[in-house]
Image (cartoon, rainbow, N blue to C red; front, top):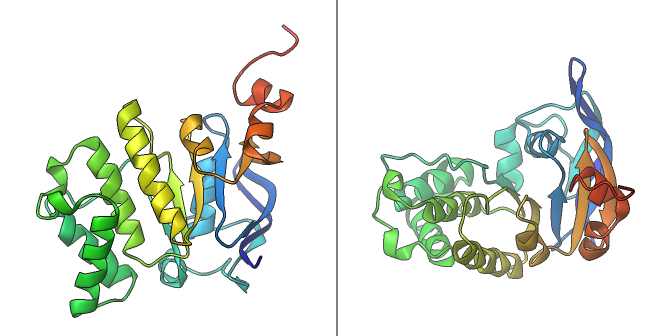
Length: 242
């Protein structure tokens, strides 16, 4: 299958702190890729490098066959790269619909009826139609997470990056959100999902990578990866020889 994303040996450091150490992987179109690793491993920094809010020190990033390494975050978004944030960041004084419209008009470049129709389509898809006129600041945590999805999807992404979107939810809420993400993935959107709620990841992703100290240390079948000795020692903190 065609590659939607290619990460070609990217490096990024802040002084002595290395957040990306020669990271390289490809992502096929339509794939859901999970990313796990301990806190501070460089997972969110990887998202920042892919979306353009951080610039690589070296290496290249390709999206849909074109190099985007030096493009701004806004241009990458216009080309089809969208993300959610670990802590939802809506415009709290605006309604769900108004938040969606900002994404559709400013990020996707839509206008008028086309923008409105896209927003209502996405709001229905993410399960927020009953809250369409509710201010974002009055939403529950689950609905704020759904609004993060809504705003990202309103930019018409080909690639959706999810940063710990299941964090802080109850089991029932997590199950509900997983189904929404599955439905989004079923439409053909490629997904890269950082998550500490591993059972949520394993319910969705086709492939898993593990990052530690900015290095990619494992890549492959999710179940096999999570059962591996190295991942249990580094990610789960289990000393196999103890």
